[in-house]
Length: 88
Image (cartoon, rainbow, N blue to C red):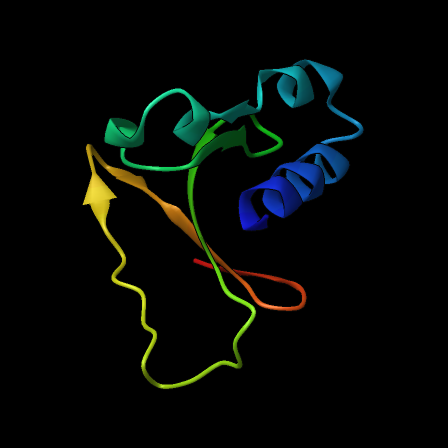
């Protein structure tokens, strides 16, 4: 559910960049070993590797993100509750 919301958000965000919009990929449907859920792009074409965590529970201090850096690329982390909130 959360990943579907992020895909929709990314497609909307890149609506003026149809070439990049077509390249958005739902990686976790292919393999869990990739390390992120969704491949998207910044408007300049820079890849965005997005890890999605979703819940229907309220925000609490029991949930936290660890920001990781791989090969000089920062992952984007999205927490889906009742809306999309992307943390960077």
